Image 1 (cartoon, rainbow, N blue to C red):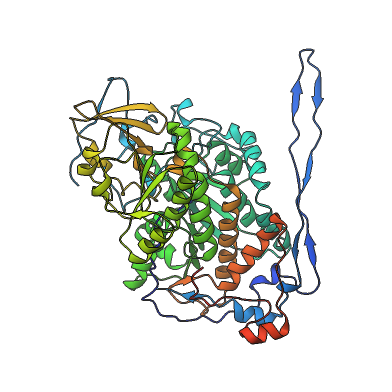
Image 2: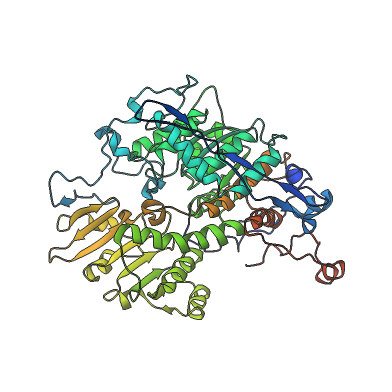
Length: 586
């Protein structure tokens, strides 16, 4: 879900443009006078048994969403729409066993069969390094039996899935209904397009965090005509009850919270390797699914019509393939879209950083000295939240532009070694590796907190802490004391993995923005005629970003000002957008 690296990877890419056709938003964009779309959602009914064994059926509660209005300032003819939607291409050492305070205490609280846990990387540096999501109704340790050893079927008799417990589907459906309440724009998109079925014939294989919010996206893709098979991009991010709810409605889900690494790759393979079902679209988060298919099933990969990637790590992999001339399918870079960078990365982290730290440590931020490594969009969000609560915030940066922004925002830019002995909290959000080293961890003071807001656990050198002279003590879920021989304790959160999804949750509304962008990108790639997109990586067109933003404005009862003809002519703009050039930095 949130990503830490904001390095511009596209400055060396050609500014080539692709010719768009007129059909992309014909499903959604309604020119003319105001049009209002209302989405009605009904809460599921339940039965409560009384002591007298009488059964009372509860009332259906219907919640009517605020109308989403496309006003006059969104009018455009199809020729203008076609022109506006031109997408722009962008171009081990052996680890010793950890000591614990008690022999009975295990490093992993999710034991699996010994043969299934691999201590070394297979295929690539996978997203198993960044587990997440504390927001699960059940804990996967409740039942030690591996889902791979179970035989389960849903109410329709289908067993084409592998989840923790299919009987949790009812709880998962309630989670999804809660998420839908703050994703009204995505539901409006679903309502407008489902009669046209723009994804009819699409066979989408997805690898993302499986949460209630992602389930709303998956069900939207299904409503638009797609068939979906899904797996988790992260071994600890899955909400088991949500996976069960998706499996119950016929989506083939292979994921559960607490997978081993062998389980992780097995689940991806089960999604891809099916003789009766071959994917033609990929929706990825981190690039593991794309990488697996490229390496293991090259013939299937060549038949893919498009890839939609939302993470900085996955996008980086795609650009590497493109640069080497090995990318044989077009890909859409959602991570660097404005609606992802400026909302998911910035505003999501501004709220979730505090939530994650509070839930795990109960720390008070007033007066605490905090170092935030990296001042990209994620770093900016973290710093704004910490500063607002009275923390003394330092920044480390390699980019002089980001460093200057930090200075102008009132933060002191330092080298980590200059303040390592005095800080209370270190937060990494760079997307790099070994940002915090063992030498620096050795010099931190007793009681310091170390955590990561990046995609994987490469930023903090956690491997160097797995040595005999250090003792690991599990305090609570995703909270460990690392104890030095002199008694010094450092609090390590989520074993250096993604903090907000590991230890808390993220705001649903922000995920609605990203999910809507992903859905539109999927529709665009799937419906694009042959030749529109080459074997390259493309940025979303500016008009698509603006459309996604406009769908979400109704939540705030926001009213856009409309340019007059004279003003539009003066600025050289179309009255209906796009309002900024592709090179504009928001």
